[in-house]
Image 1 (tube, rainbow, N blue to C red):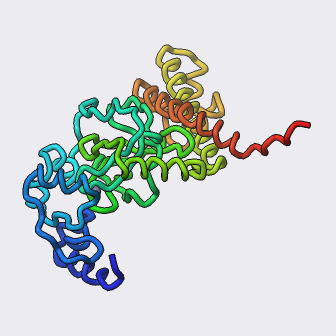
Image 2 (cartoon, rainbow, N blue to C red):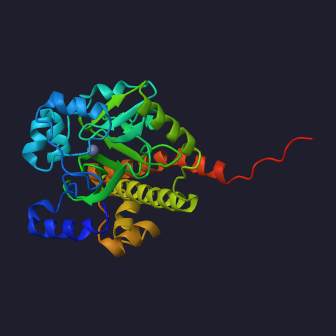
Image 3 (cartoon, rainbow, N blue to C red):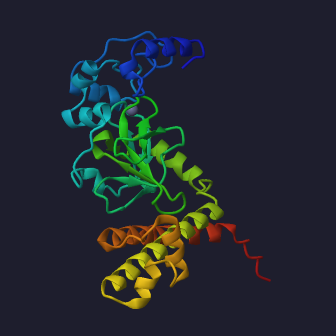
Length: 301
Ligand SMILES: [Zn+2]
């Protein structure tokens, strides 16, 4: 987008408040080129995308609906989530590139794909840092980081901090928002570009990962203790009843002082388990970051 086009975009967004929550292409054409006639069928759009990112993109919901398949439209334009394990892209292992199903922008490569067990195609990094845009959404009450295509603004999925090294990120993508391509010039270019940059991709600092793991570990221990004390008090153990009164054990006392009676029961156990799982998920990242920090060994004599 040119600098001159930005004020126009702001004006357009201000005039259409319902659109402000979604990233829309600034103008119906890319690079300021005059708008060309848009394909109006799915097969025409598919053909246009085989030649690269089309110069002209649909700008209205109706135009997008005409050129995308129903599931692609639901995910990309209405932020729907496809059913788990429904995408054939879960099984792709062949080297290649995953393009945006809306506009054919290269988004991910197989080199960064991993089996997350989530039921959605998962990647630890995008094909290039600028391929995608992230923003916070609150649709699931707790904040999540949404991932959208940098070119067409289509919704792709979410990114979480429980992925493998080196980044520790899990880009959890809807397969319907992606199209896999291998053996073409653009797929090979994307694969080569990612391979070239992969060594320089860094994860979060070791201190940050350690601090997060320590916090989760302490939460896990505190919740387990709380659960155990409550169970024992329920069974009539005098020490546990004393602990719940805040005088028999330092942690029970502290919890009692700050929060009142410590919680117990299955929910406490579940929360302890989730925090424990979070620590386990961080271990590979800690090992990777530690290796990366270790000075390389001097050459042998
Ligand atoms: Zn796109």
